Length: 466
Image (cartoon, helix red, strand yellow):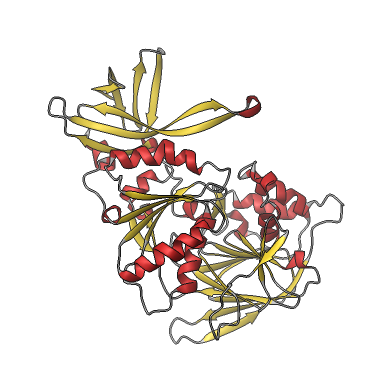
């Protein structure tokens, strides 16, 4: 460990540097303040002629009292000045130049309703001061006013500018739903051969599950995606297309209403379509997402999924978990000649049917251990009817680096297209989840999920640099 002169809020301190971070003695509180390397967002050269050195930006946390004597943890951006720094730490964190995607037209979207509603606090405490430090203050701020706001922005701003060739980068403070909204508009309403300028999206995860953010490694450090904004590179975002039978509709307003999937379906496109980038599911997973999508459940953050899972597997009426009925056809494409082979599963009774392009659905919940970031491959996770105890054990194994895929009841494989034909009387058992959005399929209806060949959006990630 080496000691380096520095200052915190104008007070001179000695910074004890190590490979794992640094620490100093706070003279006011007579306590040691430690900052881990994973908390460091960036190191900025300080050009002050009288006192040259470096400003270390890092994410800190404080505890604040909330309502009814509750406490909540607030993440905020903090800084320390150091006169010099070891080359080892500079090589990992030095901000030497602005990445190209930050020199584009910048938009910041704050989804005010995502997750537990912390998006605005993350912007004020973390993102706004961070952008000020790196001198990126010329951006348009959009705070969502409704669940249609991001869709309206994509339709009226992002897509037209992309067609005109304007380079755009969207800093998205949201969960997976906000990303899906942008994906849906671009694939729904773009008809030409190619975009002149593909927009870049930087995720700052503020949702509940944050599957995409977890799967591209944004939680591998403690900067909530800030480090990724400057160290990441734009890569094509793979997507899939879910095509439904004609009368399928979104379920909205906590299950009380239905709304059209494609309000203005193009001539000749008689089937509703949704584009996603994370997951398509039917059965227990879709039921858990749908049942927990209420204001009451959302108060519990990610725990809402576990609470809904318990009710799904152990219904309060004692009836036991539902057996889902339907036919599943899987299509595989031969990479050499392009020929397709269709396989119909022998099982017509199901419990868990999930197609995914990502590895994690929430932090630590590794649903598809073979999936790599943005590899564009669709994989199926499936098992038939199980006792509540067996089903819960399989889900628990997913928290152990995806060990559930090695269990006998689980079918886990890559595919190119999947068609589910439903054989259920009640709508409750015909709900499909696409990236957190819930669709009700009509009686005897179907859904087909397949990979999309086009790339209309980029996602900024630094997972390949680690």
